[in-house]
Image 1 (cartoon, helix red, strand yellow):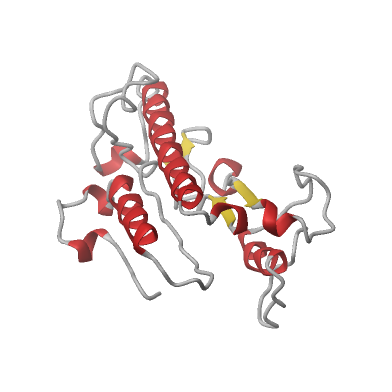
Image 2: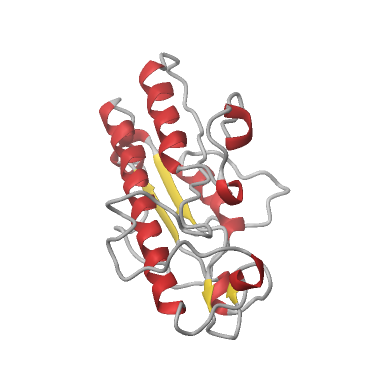
Length: 204
């Protein structure tokens, strides 16, 4: 990376659970993109952190789905959630997801406003799922149930790229795919041969 922007290097407010409000990362990107004059292609990745525990986001997102619990703390409570708190915490998680979706929209809008969207590839993927006591445990990182390892993977290519592709119209891929498949698929979209060391496949 030419630029690495994170909560522990920017010097702003202390982040809870190593989280930084997504508005900082996206705002930094918007300014960087607006000021950019280099015509070459570029790569950016975002680790949007709002859906990470404890799912704390500002209003009006925080209360969109209710009720929500008082901000849930740490300790054993983050792995074993009382039954009466589970539905409230799910609401809070969904609110955090809505907040993240807002900032994904802002990233897309920044690309559109600078004339780069039509020639872009956008990939949205989760690094893990989140459990809410379906199998007696919450959150992630301590088990491998479906709710932990089944993650979203959405890929979008701008119309400039799509014109040259022999692929079918937008559709849902029914095969099992992996995060390992992202790099080879993006490489295929932009006409680059995958590196021999890559384990994934071009899912298109």
